[in-house]
Image (tube, rainbow, N blue to C red):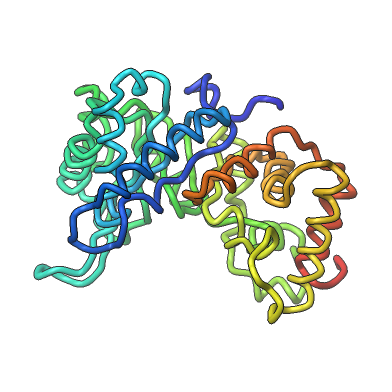
Amino acid sequence: MTDFPLQAYLPDASRLVCGCMGLGGEWNDQPPTQRDFRLAHSLVDAALDCGINFFDHADIYAMGKAELVFGQVLKDRPELRERIILQSKCGIRFDDRDGPKRYDLSPEWITRSVDHILRRLGTDYLDLLLLHRPDPLMEPERIAEAFARLKAEGKVRFFGVSNMQAHQISYLQSFLDEPLVVNQIAISLGQLDWLEEGVLVGHPAGKEVNFTPGTLEYCRHHRVQVQSWGSLAQGQFSGRDISQAAPNIQQTAELVHALAQQHQTSAEAIVLAWLMRHPAKVQPVIGTTQESRLRACARATDVRLSREDWYQLYVAARGKPLP
């Protein structure tokens, strides 16, 4: 496979990312169980065995327990830290006695969040810190101060964002000395607005599209790595029961499985290879904790879909011909 933007900063980064949202047990204040710790060990082993060395976290996953159980893996096997790339996110706060669920990109919250993330993961630094959601009250000049301090202290190597559009990234970047190197957004074969936005320019159907124009182009122009969360489309094309789904979903699933047979690979690999075929060189985040499914996903790096295969999947998923 050709290189992708993030390799300019992290040359050893794997093309796929192992998402750790499913680690740590239930999203409550109950402590993780021994099973949760064992699952973290087995997921790390399976990912590394598949050539995936990139792990994605967020401070809210399982109320912090996803990072906690992963940190135990690093405590048990400290030699792993230099073999892997750790990414985490901050900025979402759940409702508490101080207020409702909200976003907080104040420098105080960013700094505090990083300290807690590092403590839970049991590491001195993050390879990447992403701002999880755009905060309407964010002050870019103060975020810049927080980033500079975290960089100077050696706590974070690189910075990025999540769920932001081109104008937000550009505005924030104008205050920063460090480049924003990642934008993690929800894109998949089951969520097509990221493609429809460009295809339906000037078309009446475009008014139904909910995706900010120019975001992909901005990321490509400025070498910002596009990461996709929800990249497997909740499994609806790779094995989930879709007997009650819309005809276009069922037809797309059939096509995915036909292409999997043709390429002698897994359905998951086809779904991810479709994303990776885009010139933005999308880096999928895989959100499963099932070893067999992770291995099925890892096969995507060996698949190169033709232009015709790519368009067949796109048109099938949209459920109608292109204009």
